[in-house]
Length: 188
Image (cartoon, rainbow, N blue to C red; front, side, top):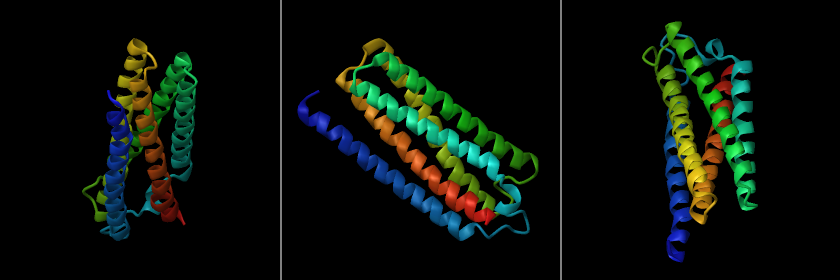
């Protein structure tokens, strides 16, 4: 890679993150418009469990810390620490996803699927899109772990880790908005 290609990677990734901001802004706007449209079904206040969602939030925020520490370890060229911290981040991401899938499954078992009301459709779409991003970020993390194991901490691997770290932090910020506007506002 030449010097100009290296400059384009972070810029291109920031452009991608901004397009994801637009996607999530549209989903938040849709949810804001439809959150009261329950069609006689339950509202968020009746469905959501604050302690459960708070546990999810803590897990995701800790994962943000571990991936940040992985980036710091990469800066100090500590490959083993990077791998351990990425594995911890991966495990936390999987725990978060398991909790989200569990919440969705519980709602569906209780007869409150996405098709019941506009509120639930917008809820499942917003939260599910975030979950899909977490899933894809976790797959990306696995690929990066294999790169680290076989190629080491090359400039290219560090650049990929930087992009993944930005992506993961972005998802944490989106989750804070989801936690606040979807869950907390519903329970107030």
